[in-house]
Image (cartoon, rainbow, N blue to C red; front, side, top):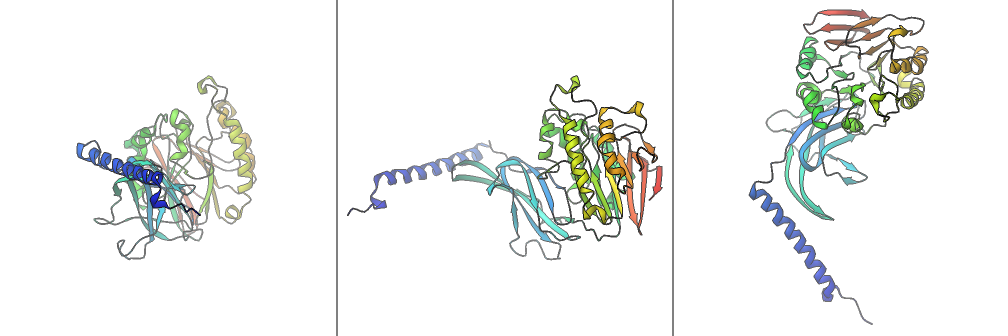
Length: 407
């Protein structure tokens, strides 16, 4: 009987030699890149920022300047030093494989409601890979050595008091973001909403960061949640189809509902303002169908315990339905026809909108049974829940109160 002896097999010897040679060649290439100066230092260039923070989960997003594998280290805010021990790692993966990309998003589940967590993100450069032969480069991370780690606090339905801010229709005017948020004392607020049209057109990923997100990260978005209601202008431009790569990442839809304290927030995606057949859309949109699907979702979530057990219900949507039919465009007519009948049958306290580039207060009527606040491009809406009373204010850039109402 003959036995197949691995060491004496010439083919396997050659095959193993090829593997060694390939690995050695990859190593030589990586060294040459570093020595020649062709390789820039790996860095985290945008973010990190929080998305879809809820009671038991959060998604963290960031970008590196090179293809990397990414992960998050997350620990409770328990007063221990970050370097006390090895910290749990949550990798950016797809179906069990670590993603090699300059864009990373990690969704972490199983968190505790109303709990403060500390975190840092990593990006480890991948110089090359061929099958299982991978050559890694440098690693970049957010700083937990020379400054305090980034942190956030999960939502809690048991929370008694809270505050939030809403801005919209910025259209890339970066300086207006800080001006508006400072007028409303943003450092003391907990939740932030971008209610659409933060850009005029989403032509590429860089415009999103230069147009508003780098500023948001600088001011609050690494540690405080920002929820995004897409506007009609975020549906325009080549990169519009990749919008969810950056916002509401790993969620089923761009519309959603969540709870913070006794307030249930419904965030709607109102789509475009003109008919799908309009020449401006080049026969590439199908928002009527999309809004019908959304209406079916809405009719179900208002039956949930999350909604029913809340003391307050606030709808956030970019385009407002108007009672004056002569001023409604197609998208607004769709909202009135598909969403409002559902909302009229449940206990909605108010709807917060934008889109019109002017501030409006629309009183409840037989057509729309709850008030609608339309925020302008140069105003900010402030919401505060204190001692069981919900207060909504609209402020201009100087902090002057334009509208004020208690619910």
